[in-house]
Length: 110
Image (cartoon, rainbow, N blue to C red):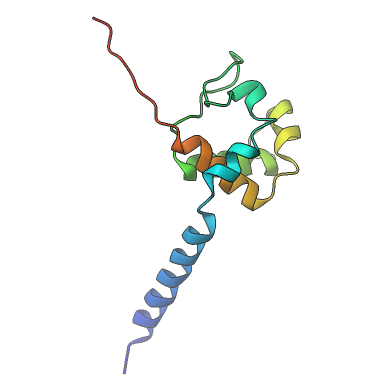
């Protein structure tokens, strides 16, 4: 007979695994969806607007959390709030997959 805490841990692990799997996006689909994003963040995630951050190479989890914060009003930016309003969870996951898949390289000055 298993103690109840082991069943709880197993169930919690299963839920965590499923939510991570559902959050995994499709980078190719994300690239097709970046029309509005690229105005400020660029196709390559390097900001074209001095007030917008570079997002290439950021983690998927961070990008998803940021977009959802703009959707909920937790984070405020007039332009972002308008752009993210109509994004579905799938759109957000796909955009995050695209921008996080971009490799960022840095050269140290000589």
